[in-house]
Amino acid sequence: MSKQSKEFWRWREYRHTVPEMDWHDAKIVTAGVDIGSVGSKSVIMLDGKLHAYAAIRTGGVSEETAIRVLNWALDETGLQTKNVHCIVGTGYGRVNVPFAKRTITEIACHARGAHYIYGPTVRTVLDIGGQDCKAIRCDEKGKVISFLMNDKCAAGTGRGLEVFADLIRVPIAELGKASLNVEKEPAPVSNTCVIFAKAESVALLRQGWEKEKVAAAYHLAMVNRIIDLLTKVGVEKDFVVTGGVANNIGIISRLEKNLGIKPLEPNVDPILAGAMGAALFAKALYEKQIGLR
Amino acid sequence: MLAHYGYKDGSGDYFIIIDTDKCDGCGKCVEACAYGVMELIEDEFDIEDGSMAAVTEEHRKKIKYSCGPCKPISGERKLPCVLACSPKAISHSW
Image (tube, rainbow over all chains, first blue to last red; front, side, top):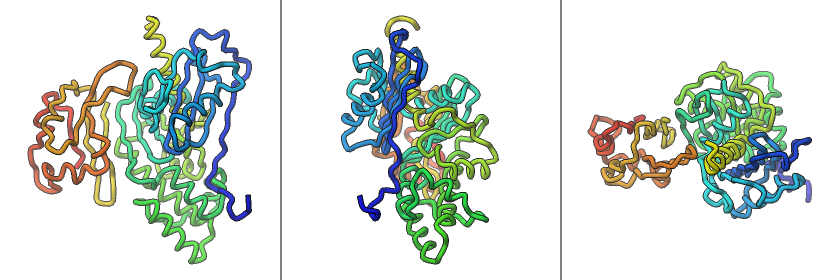
């Protein structure tokens, strides 16, 4: 690949198995498959405990992506699809997960997953995905009380950041950090549309702004838009951020600053929250099926 | 659960809010809406079976216009969907 065609937007696909866990000892093996608009995630759980996971880019055919991401998560665990008792599908492409017993919305799954990752004190979940942004309020059981989704425009989403990373030629994983490398926070760019925001950013670059400063203006615009959405459902502690953009420090630190609430820090990649929620729903579904609940 | 269906854009907030705890899945709002904005969907928020009212995927991103004939930007008017809902589960943000 030539230097010119380097893909700055491309984030790392990966898989992981939690060591020292054997599925033979588990009573219930469940999986959650979250087919998002940009990324697809799969989580394997043994008796409701995280065992393995994988995250890949969503392809053109949701069925294929679902099979690929589940198989990759199962890789190295010794498990096969037939050993998994119950699979739940979620995300945009959830109706296309071929082996799913049931589909649950990503809203319910993110609330449930956040409850698992961060504990029962979570009341507000902000999921910033590839193509939309969801503000979710939940109770101490991880059940959704109120939600609001904005998927009319890619401004304020992960895909917008990918486009921006490509524009200023900074790898997506380093973009958030680069945006913090400014002395003073500049005025935000437009936030009603990702195309306008990009056009404005180009104009600023042409005026001679450093790319870090433009990145700061872009991140700030995103954060303003997200806060608008959040305040609509109300923010109550504890506040957490899930989805791929939760890994962007430029967004997280500005959210903390402008909202006045520090989001809890995760111990596992928050991009997996939806798939984790789905795997937990799968466990509950299986227990119901065999008469345990 | 309060389900907000709709969007926010430069001209304002447009959300139809359905209180799914109140909604009994009777489907009267679906019949009442002349523009096909409402539908009954399967409850996908939990593992229990059931149905609930929702705004159709088709209209979610344009309810300002879809609901325009019943709900002008200014002036109050009784809305067919709200009137049809006996448990009072439907409200609007604008």
